[in-house]
View 1 (cartoon, helix red, strand yellow):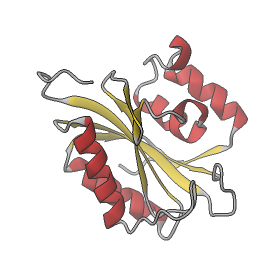
View 2 (cartoon, helix red, strand yellow):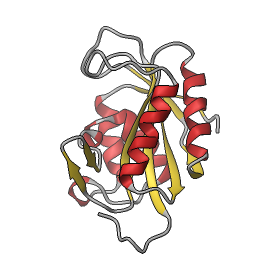
View 3 (tube, one colour):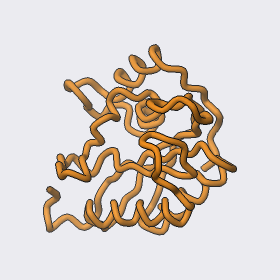
View 4 (tube, helix red, strand yellow):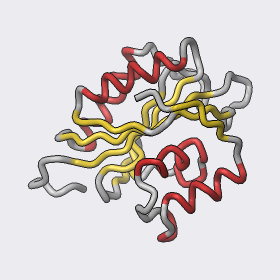
Length: 167
């Protein structure tokens, strides 16, 4: 867990939407995250759904947030943001107006039944690694490889289409 003496935390949050006005849901999330601390955003990418395939394509991006929130406080804030975007959790990996996931929280490893950081499935998902590589390409990830190398490997497997930079 994080050192109690640390004031600011470097957090990377993956956000995605595949229902309604997807880009507006992302903007809502970016605006809400900016209330938690200074933000820096990746580009937006469009990808096919993973897991439950009978749903629309997603728009995804990653936001770097510098915040004073603890990991648990951040999780609660993200769930509140999803709720305000009318997120419904009825199908695992199903369609959603907004999905916000803590990908990285400082260099911490956090493991609870309901919350794991680094995000346990991020290393196999191009829609996470490709935008994350825009923000922290040299940071070491799974197996000691840098994020940009992991992203390129996943990009070869999955179709990730660059939509543009909006924030």
